Image 1 (cartoon, one colour):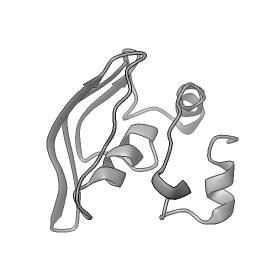
Image 2 (cartoon, helix red, strand yellow):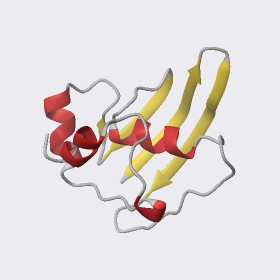
Image 3 (cartoon, one colour):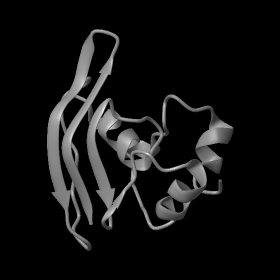
Length: 104
């Protein structure tokens, strides 16, 4: 289960996520859609720990992940799966980092 409460993320003066609340139950499938710049990728990057929120909570299977070290977060990532539209990658990573994301 993923529980997101009061999630905020801004880049300089641009507030991308503001008080986002979302619950995804185990076994449930969700689709994140929206216009360009709406914060879809930022939300996913927060969930998988590529970037950290400015405020709020992200719990995965009851574990608060926003302050986990990389080693502990990697254990949780091994239980995750994502499908990107058109095979897109994380734009903030190079090819090697994208391919090795789950391997690390």
